[in-house]
Image (cartoon, rainbow, N blue to C red; front, side, top):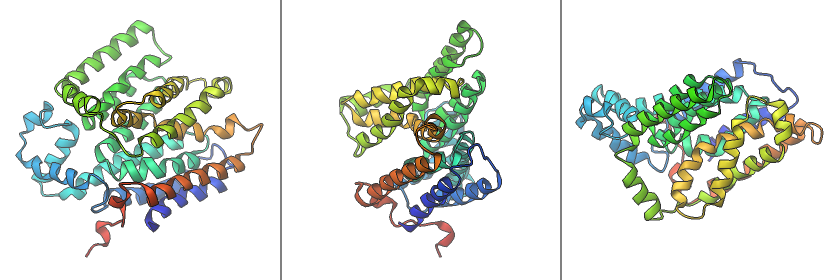
Length: 348
């Protein structure tokens, strides 16, 4: 467990000591953090609940035809293609995981560095986004890393940059297609243009990634009412910052005028919290709402500067997410698949 606490305490301590230096985005410490997390995530060994499932993806990749991969017949084409390249060159699963870790960590750190209190945002991401998701569910981790890039461009009002990154994300996990409509909330350009652009990209991605899989996904996740342990807790973790954003929406509008699409993300977190059926389906889709935790909690020092000092907010936030990590490591059903942590750099 020491490795996971190290991963959390490094940004957590930085968040507390840097709480009074909002907007300080000095690059050098982030470079070291990037390298550390890429190594810890990308070179892990037999860590994560789906480790052996992903190993089978790698082993089966040799049997795929490149044409079928590009047409999406072997699964998520981006991830299958990456495995196909690694398997045909005998580079091993380490190569696949390392590339995925680079995409995930780069997206996450770049996203956090755009926030007013970047270290708080990064610390908030560690217990679930980094340890559980990034180290356990590789395809979703890549999709989320690309989503972070997409959200940066969305807030900057660049529609096609946003759609590009969402399109690549859907190549690694088809469920990312549901994020395409967020492009409608770019506050630049006329509505008709945005509707045509979003509809065209949505249709193309749907045809390539979801058209042949939607029936089986519905049967598996909804008709079968599959349940995910901890789903309600994860939904609640998105719901709370969503409620905070909506409660302080007037201050948010003044402080972050280009971030109005976050209102819709917050409403999505409330909708997920109200749904009581098919918790696995809700859990999978709620994954894409997790950036709410990063963006809201890292902007709280601006929203609540009149009531609470940044230092106090940082301490409360870091202690709260330390409790989340403690409970998950000690009581989560599937945490056993993460313990002990192993890294190929230290295996003899």
